[in-house]
Image (tube, rainbow, N blue to C red; front, side, top):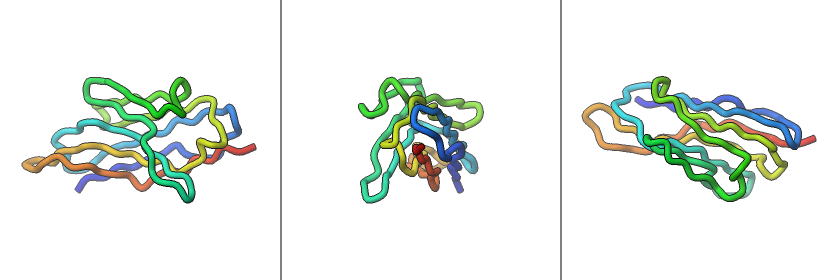
Length: 120
């Protein structure tokens, strides 16, 4: 079994900051690209940011310059630092990771999500 557990969501005022964390645990041989997605009510789930094993990052246009993704491979953890938050950033944020279990193929895994609400 592999588990991804997000933390760090909550309520923040516009212009504020939050830092999301996602830790992978379980039977893991290797972790590839890790990323964050978000889904607002009534909308589809969209990519926010992702980071490769080599540290290459890419971001959705809506968050460029405000959000920063990073990873700590020693802790099997990916982070999302969110600054200058806007009401339109309000959504459920989901962690995703490409993981290979021992003696198995690569598969995508998802966390259960953490809610971020930006409101005054």
